[in-house]
Length: 321
Image 1 (cartoon, rainbow, N blue to C red):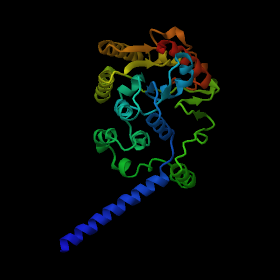
Image 2 (image 1 turned 180 degrees about the vertical axis):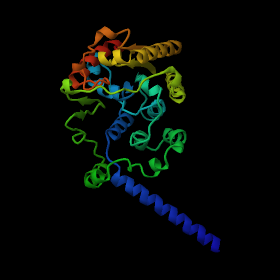
Image 3 (image 1 turned 90 degrees about the vertical axis):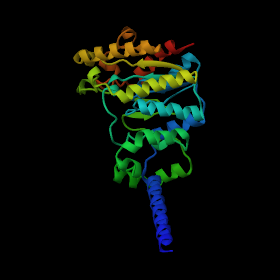
Image 4 (image 1 turned 45 degrees about the vertical axis):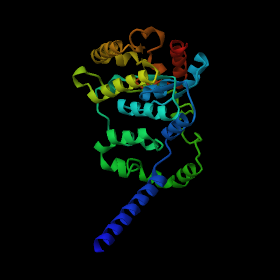
């Protein structure tokens, strides 16, 4: 009898803790652009889905590409998106709205570094609807991460900002409001097709910082394995797969020439073996788009809005069927 009461109290306590944690998550976790992205791609069918890193997010404009190809598309790229994230995003799409093609933006540095802890660690998983892919994603990724990322996903965000934004956050979630008016800042704005447009900057004030550099000696084995799994999944599901690396400013390419050349050779060999089309705008297609710093907002290779639209038009001709 005493044991049953103790067990009952324990169950009630655990349930209460779960309710409190879910409540805090509901009112404190901000409405990010990834919330809009996941909602859009799981409720609307798109022929083309773009995956990759921040270079893809800010350099690839689906609207411009659609105007050339006549195909619908959405940009699911984001800074911090590693191979494991792209793989489970693809699995989620297969459950909800299967695309005809995935265009995967390759930033070599992401294949020589480890996935970082921080608010981007849960950015994708947190927005997944209840699904088989979410459960699998949890098992493969979150069981090895900082427990705070699982129990308190809002802890990486500014508490002062979260508390100030509670009324707006709760209102948007309660009303299922996916408007994008508040996903805009002085330096950039989010578009409904997933593209983030960066505003032009005074490039004379920019300082070069070292990007994530690739080295075959430090290849992230897990990321390469998940890239292979993603390609295999697309092949199995008859989804066309195209890889692309967006242009990088000339000064950066020259300063880190050895690292970039090693990366280009590695991925050209890899995609060649996988029989995947690889569009590298820093080698084979170097001359097709400007590498002048005035087309970018930093030396890392994030373009301003006009340049991104111009580049997307060029990319679109390769994607046109």
